[in-house]
Length: 163
Ligand code: FE
Ligand code: FE
Ligand code: FE
Image (cartoon, rainbow, N blue to C red; front, side):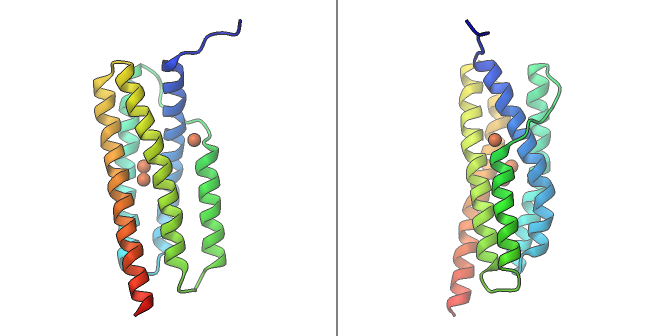
């Protein structure tokens, strides 16, 4: 029989996935802010960069709770989503649809993060780690709030274009 991997192994693995993803997102947000046409969207990306830096610190605290070094593990999902975002930035550069494309990219990223943090929080509960639950929930709430704000920005952008 192969070596039995358990929920705590899966938890650590997924934590590494998110650590990698958040670091990659922190590198990408300044590019999105630079590309954004509307001042509101630009400010939104800049604000989420600050939040992302705090999220990375919270993940480091979860690694600490596990007594493990904070290490990332390549997240192919986030690489793919950001690759798509880059194509949109190239293909819709200098067009009125650019911001809508940037918002759609950002929302795909937020939804991935929401899925992952929801799962990690549930596993932390099952593993009896209340402090990790608190930290992961703080990240989850910021991603949910960001997603809502992006929806509002998308609606504002659509109204502006329709005017
Ligand atoms: Fe995040
Ligand atoms: Fe991943
Ligand atoms: Fe996020």
